[in-house]
Amino acid sequence: MYFETTARLLDRLEKRLKQQVGLTLSEYNMLLLLSEAPEGHMRMGQLADAIVFSPSRLTYQVKVLSDRGLVKRVKCADDGRAWQAELTAEGRTMFRKASVIHAKGVKALFTDVVSEDELATIYRTFAKVSAQLNEIPED
Image 1 (tube, rainbow, N blue to C red):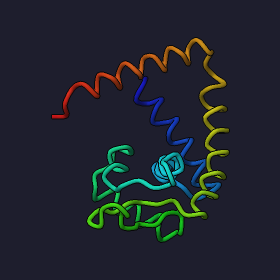
Image 2 (cartoon, one colour):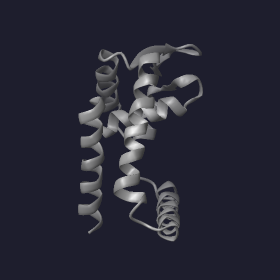
Image 3 (cartoon, one colour):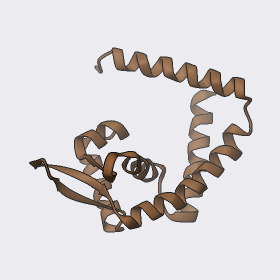
Image 4 (cartoon, rainbow, N blue to C red):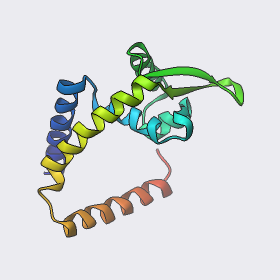
């Protein structure tokens, strides 16, 4: 039940974003992470870890968003060897628009359906799983 429901929920949320602003959930997530980052940028490796992408997949995704004018790839000011992804003004505007659409979808498809107690249980459960994932090294 978990896998099917999660897949269906993510599919519905992504379809809304694609239809209304042309973003995938992964692209939305990247814009979210960059919008929350200090000064709107993150090192590529840090961003790849946060979004759980391989470095090559992240490089491709940054290029896609860069071609759309939503992010740009720039050298790190403090380390000329490293690159970072930076949210553009257009990217910030797109994120604000997309976040309203995404929030409405999450509300209609998820939070309106479960009680406050159930949401708290879900949060506690995933906090435990997340902590365990942090403790156990990857294979």
